[in-house]
Image (tube, rainbow, N blue to C red; front, top):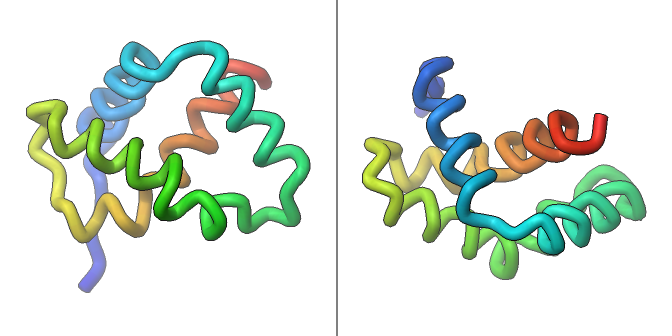
Length: 85
């Protein structure tokens, strides 16, 4: 099954994560992405990825849980691009 996140839902999720996750953590994530072979999110699926998904599930945003398993890392990569260029 394919899920698509509406642009406003995506932006709300990004803004929520930006508010809830510290700048120090974003820097650590940026470094992890930069040092990876492109599949950083596989190693982080049950660590940082679970933390992100739990934040989003608790956010009050109406997001599909299964869908979040497949897209959480794309939200993170978009945030890193916005923060660090």
